[in-house]
Image (tube, rainbow, N blue to C red; front, side, top):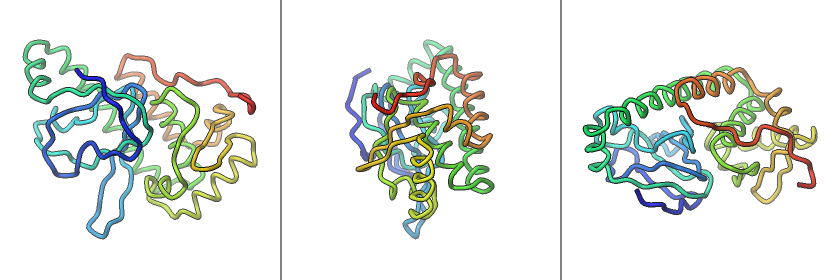
Length: 221
């Protein structure tokens, strides 16, 4: 495994294109984005320190099911797919653990679809912020309102209004493309049930600690 830098906005896998390496994020987060022919897109999954980018390899597919783009800069471990396949044969426990992770990712993808269909932009933004914080080691998210809107598949004006409400309530601080979460419990209270569902299933299926920052962060921190 090779430790690599994951730069913000870097595309690590192209949709429907074969890939040679998988990635295990440590301090970075990678969005799985589905692209349509008209150029529109939406995030269908988010991978961080709990998982692996390149899960189609585990299901027998040779191509990336969707585009994988770095949402939060940081580090990851890169591993060649041929080496990983040989590891499956040598150590079945590795494959079994990764398949459990695939199940948790499928639950996240399904819950995202439900959330985008039935819940408000305010709730979707809270869910998205919490899932992101669970997968990185900081309480800040570097992302413009336009990119967040693209990830959620909603209008930029809706994200701006939702972010403004959270800032007025003292839950976040937003400026110059950086969101700082000041009150995580407050964000959790405003989120829909979709976040808790994904969180609980991830905890059940992937036995490793996530959500390093659960307490409130003072405004002057």
